[in-house]
Image 1 (cartoon, rainbow, N blue to C red):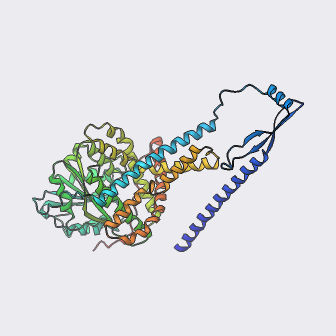
Image 2: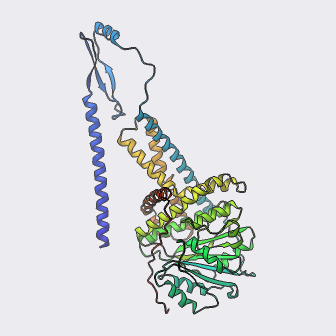
Length: 522
């Protein structure tokens, strides 16, 4: 069945390509016919003589406007023609089409420049990871007077995974007398509550369930309500599908001995990477994003991002920036920028690895991307101007922060650039050397590794650093995921615009899980 669907999809793609090619052939044929019909045309007649022109198309520009040359005429005809000719016009009016083409060209140039900036960013990060000394802060802290912490496990209809997460946390090496585990059961309608209560029986002194029966939807709203259960000044957050290692809590808590650290983020590693092609592609994407992108930003003193899970926040820092915001779909990105604007440091720990479950079906992945893009662009609109005006943030952090805010806008800008380039080609808008050069430059920066696919270099570097060179053969297939990202971002921006115009309440789209649910009596 799956093979049949895949074959059907391939056939549809081939048919679309054939239709597109046929449309180009029809267009080119029509242009040639139009040029041929203008081979001879009357130029002017005064009743006694007629001057004719022959139309010659430049061989180097077969679709450009034809160039007219007058045929030889008698001296009388030339005099008559001169007498009948209108006076020369000093200025040629500019048509609306020419203005539109100029605006399109300007947009393509600006987009090519933006793509070049992002490509340079990816290359700097890749080179930093390959050749520069790596910053591994606080890794040497193994024995200390560990502070009291609270671990929150966010769970909404997580019967397939929540018991595994809590069981993994019970195996931690963190001192039990300084640890509280709070599963946040957010309005679940499945077997999540029963599973949490069953695990709590095994360690009632550690696990203090927080069952939330009503309230505003969303992870941030649930965490905001669950803060009443916190003990100590350090909170660690996991999503319910994560499987923490025994020593992970100590690794995440170690940076908080530095009083300037407001948040900590660990590395996310897919646990189900061998399930299918999509899971393998997401494994590569996660590796590039964390092993290279996050670690390089940490090395260069830029803006490491708090990811909302496998991370921790200092309660006093959270209170200082106003607590969790429940009106956003990306509470992690929102928290990253509020901490940055308040001069709190966020630290990334590449060695603090934790395993997650990635989507195994493309529709689930598309919905996940749409939610991320919506929330990320909410943060963009809220904090772009405050970031540019921030007196406590360095110039390099402001620049990196702006580029980070734009990562879920660039795919939509690319889709628009593709459309503009296609329209210019189909309407014969490329009628000058400058525009032709522009489209060539755009193609170079938008489709090659010197531009939008520059992020693929990070994936290759991450695979090399992780010693997984056999996965490199899948790197070209990431183009499929890139196209899905473009579609998801466009849908997210459209949905966000409708939410603002219609004043709709934000909808939290939960990610589907693929592990088999366990029995409550486990």
